[in-house]
Image (cartoon, rainbow, N blue to C red; front, side, top):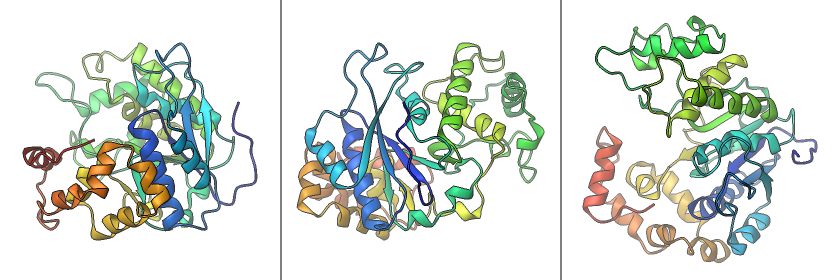
Length: 334
C-alpha cells in the first residue's frame, strides 16, 4: 500500500536503500538534506525492497544504527514489493518503489549516491512536468557498422508504444548525433504523481525487456534498461528535457557523485566542504564509519589524497581516465 498521505508543502523526495553500500549512502543523503535545507517542507522517503520470491535473501536495511540515524534525520523508511524486477535487475527498484508513495503528490527521485548542497525545497518540482537528469553521456545505444543508427533505434521504441517520435527530437542538434534524441541519466527524475509515473515506467521497462523491437534486440539492456525506458515514459506523460528552473539539480543544489573517489577528484570545493561538514557530527560519523570506503575516504583522509592528484580546471575529458588514475595510485574504493 502507498505511504499514508498528508498535505505536503512542495514535493516529496524518494531514494532507495538496501543492505550494503546504499544504506550508508542514504544516511549521507539525509544528513546533507538536513544540513543544506533544514526547512525542507516535504517528506523524505527511504524505500527498501521487501523480502520476496525475487530476492534470494532479505534485501532490506540490515544495520540498526542506519535505521536509527534515518529516523533521527526525519526520513521515513518504507517498504515496497518487487513484482517484476529484483536481484537480477536491482535498478528496477527505482521504478517499483514509486507505487509505495502518496498518490498525486509531486515527487523527486534521487539516486542514493547524491549529496544535497543547496536549498532543494526552492525548486519548482510541484509545478514541473516530468523531467530527468541531463548529466548523461552517449552510453546507449551502441551503434554498430551496418546496423541501425540512432534515429532508427529510438524510433522503433517510440513506434512500439505509439508515441510521436519527431516531437521528442532536439532540432538544434544534427541527425545521428546522440544528443538529438531524448536521453536521460536516471540519477534524478521528477513528476506530479509517483504512482502514475512508476506504473508506466515498470510497464515500459518490462515490455522492452520481454519484447524489444528488432532494432533493439542486439543492444545491451543491462544496466541501461531504466534509461532506455525513461525518455519514453517522460515523453508519454507530456514531459521532456528539464528547463532552466531545474538547473540546480546536477548544479549548485545537488551533486550525483556516484563514487566518493570521483567526488573528491572532480567536484567543487563547496561540494567537498558540504560532505565533510555533514559527516563531522559524531552521531553521523559513527554510523558511516561502518562502511569501509566512507571510513577511509572521508575520515582517514584518503579522499584528500585523491583530490591532490587532479587539477579541477584541467580534468581528463573522460571519466575512465579519472578512474584509472585513481586506481593506479591504489585509492579507488566503492
